[in-house]
Image: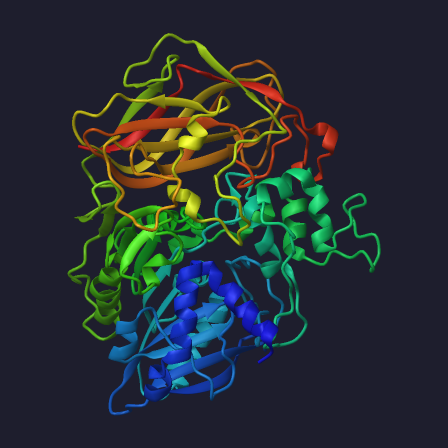
Length: 640
């Protein structure tokens, strides 16, 4: 295989690995021969109902004395290594399931790598298909149908799993599911591209810039080599890079996208990245994005499929997806076996084999991921694929990790049934109180030339992760970040569920973004418990970011129909922050930060209303004064 292909494959692994994990994975790949010694590998093409052939890799146990379930993962990230004489070092969801014996199958989805067809990023589900119409649900159905009829020594039961984009395909597998599908575990699954990954509530995740070409470059034939390339930033300072680039339209050059009345000028200046085109030409939550969402189709998950939704409370990529997938199945199919597992993880960390579990600088304990793999994930699949498949699995409805107390808890519902809503108010003297104060405003200048950074780190990233637990002292000490906090807590205070920020705001301009963070301020006398913490930081007075979210202000009333602010007129901006399970311990403080820039995690808002920010001009960007009123509140879900 060419060197470029190997390097590209390593870049793809960055989607679910940190640099240290990647090094470990590479070393393991070189050393381990377990899969080769214990499995046979067969590469097949499976024909879909519309004639498209999908490349599929089947790892079957060499011990043929018994029948095995099939564990299937469909992926846009490649079934590499290609060739029946080349083996992965690890297959399946975890090492236990690999060594216990299962038939493990990987498939390149339509239009990717060695499969035929045209790729569509988050291909829309077709509700009422004609005879040979195909989407990802039919591709999964046809694949499972072929496997149970043709894979030797299978027991007729299939499970699906995947993390991130493969997690989305695991969700897809449950819709109009094949009768042989008995268990599915969508993990960090994408639910809707207007709220996951590349967008958050309509704001563009500029920090994902380098990943766009991974999804937006067409190929015209099966290939085992990368057909796309990643943009070169030629700097290690992404904050300065994007600040110097200016308006988003200046990034068009990296995608060979020439704008002239939103049409392609000529073949030489063609749109060479269809995903970038979708982003640029569809700034609102229109029919394009709506059709790609899978959440609204979860009423089509049959009771014959058990689901276990897995996610990380500090997952920067896909937090919306798994939470909304679990809640969607609960709402639409309350009698299904549907469970939730959420731990102290960043993107995909539950699948790693490291003993120490930390996110960025923050340490949560040892063997947390290993415990999940052995005691939860393995038990789930074995029960439904090898056991009697009843709803009595011995696993809880919700298995969640308290990221403040650093311990697992089990509940028979999520959020827990005894969790209650309680509001706290943003007082004019920068305090967080449980009673509303006099209606006054607190103002700050949002300088378009000096946006608030999302991280102190000077680097470029493929996709950001570490910031989810970053120390927020650097932001709290800026004049353009408003801070509201409690006194030291006299007893533990536990949040278990979502958070709703109900801001009352005004601006001198006609547009603004609004960012809210929930922060756990640690006591001053704490000692470091993580030897890998960055040298300039201390756990003493650490400002742990527990949850954060942005809302592009134009979407405050509708994601479909944006509207400007009226200058200096008070307006309501409600921001839903995704679920947390976190105890602010006695002696800690609860802090709320409110700001209007978060750069370059999200792109700069011009702060002057334009129809399409992706086409804004330099002169549209203006420094403005923003205000937050003291009748603004934060509605917590509190565990009593």
